[in-house]
Amino acid sequence: MPATTNATSNTTPLGQQLSESPVVAQALDTLIAEVESKSAQITVPRGPVDGMSETYEAYMKRAAATRGKGLLYPYIGSGLGNRALVELMDGSVKWDMICGIGVNFFGHSDSDLIRASLRASLGDVTNHGNLLSNWGPYKFSETLLELAGRNSGLSQAFISPTGALANENALKVCYQKHAPASRVIAFQDCFMGRTVTMAQIGDSAGARVGIPLSTQVDYMPFFDEVEAEAVGLAKYIDGALVRLQEFIDRYPRQHACFIFELIQGEGGFNTAKRDYFRALMERCKANSIAVWDDEIQTFGRTESMFAYEALDLGDLVDVFCVGKMTQVCATLFTEEYAPKPGLLSGTFTGTGAAFDVGNRMLERLRDGDFYGADGVIAKHRDAFREQVRALAARRPEWFPKVESVPGKPGALDIVGGTGGMMRMTPFGGKKAKVTKACRACFDEGVVLFYCGHGPYHLRMLPPLGVMKLEDWPRVFECVERGLAKVAG
Ligand SMILES: Cc1ncc(COP(=O)(O)O)c(C=O)c1O
Image (cartoon, rainbow, N blue to C red; front, side):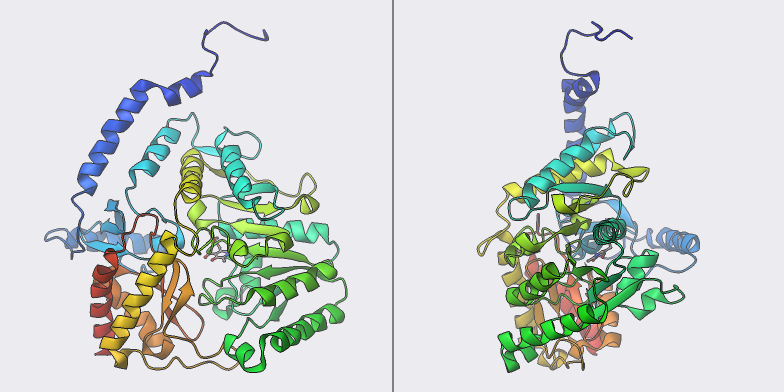
C-alpha cells in the first residue's frame, strides 16, 4: 500500500470533513429548529390527553409483557420535553425531578446535546470498542482526566457502559494490586450496582436473594452525626478506627480495598465529616488497602464537581468510578494502581453519541457557574429546602419527627442531602407511606423516587443544568397535592 495518496488535497480526513461540513451544519440547524418549536409547546404539567390514554394502556401492557412484570411507574416517554418538563406517550407532561436516577442533568430536549448526539450519529459505526474505536472515547477520557487531575492523582481511565461494570473493573484493579488479598470493606447501606459481585457487596438483602455469596465483605457502620455530636467528633473517629483495625487485625493483609460512597445514594443521601473519611482512608493507606471512591451518583451534583474535592480527599483516592450523568461510565486510577495488560477489556465501550454528549456535559459543567458556595447548585439546594420548610409549616402533621433506627445514622431533619442530591422526609420516614407518596406525586405531575433503607426519604436528582429557580414553587404545588392524597 502506498504511504500516502493524493485522493484529496485537504489535510483533514474525510470523516472529519463530513462532521464539519456546512451542509451538515445547515441540516442540523433545521432539525434543531424543529425540535425547539415542538419542545417550546411544553410549558406546564398536564394530565393525559383525551384519546391517547387507551393507546397508552396498550403500550404499558406490551412493555410489561416484555419484562414479565408491570412498570413501577406508568412512564413511557414520548421522546420530547422542555428542560425539567417531560412529555409521556399519553400526552401528559410532568416535572422530571429524578432524571433517570441522576442521568439527565441537562433535562429534556436540550438543543446543544441533541446537536452533539446527531453529529456523532453520522459516524461510520454506532458503537466503539476497546480494540478499535474512533476518537470519541479518548476525547471523553481526556476531558474527564483533566478535571479529575485538578485535585487528585487519578491519571488513567477505563471506560465501561454501566456503573456496575465500572465498579467491577475497579474491584479487579484493587484485587490485582493487592493480590492475594480477597476481602473488601464497605459501608453499611452502600449500593454498588447489580452484577453478581456488586449485589453481594451492596448492603441490601433484597438485592441478593438467591445469589451465592462468594465475596467476603466486612461492613463498617456509616457515620452517625447524632452520635458523633454526642461523644465529640475526635472520640467518635477513634471508635471508628478501632472498628476498622479489628477487621484489619482479624484478616491481616486480606483486604484489597475499602469502598467509599462519600454521599450514599440509594442508602439515603447520608454523608460524613471530612475528618472521619480522612482518618479511615489514612488507616487504609497505612495497611495497603486501596481507597476506592464510588461517585457514580454524586458526580457533578454536589457543590463541587467531585465529592472528594468538597471533602478535600483527592490526595487519598486510589481508584474512582463515575457514571450516570457522564452518559458513559469510567474507572479512574492513579499510576500506582494501573492494571497489567489483559485485566480490563470488553467488546463495547459505548456509542459515539454517548461519548460526544458525555464530553459536552463535562465541558458545560466545567465552564458553567454550577459549583461553589454561590453556585447554581447551592442556589437550587436552598430553594428546595425553602420549599420543604414552607410545606412543613403549612402541613406540620405530614412531617412528624423522623424516627432513628437502631444501628443506623441517628435522628434526621425532615430536609437534607447535599447540593443537587435532595431529600425530604414526610410521614416520619415510614416506608409504606413514602413509597405510596412517590406514586401519588407521579400522578399529580412530578416524577421523583425514594431512597434510604429506613428511614425512607423522597429523593430528587433534578435537572439543575437547565432548571430555573422559579420552577420550584410549581414543582411543590404537585408535591403538595401528592402528599395530601397519602396523608388523607
Ligand atoms: C453509587 C452507585 N454505584 C453504582 C451504581 C450502579 O450503576 P449502574 O446502575 O449504571 O450499573 C449506582 C447506581 O445507582 C450507584 O448509585
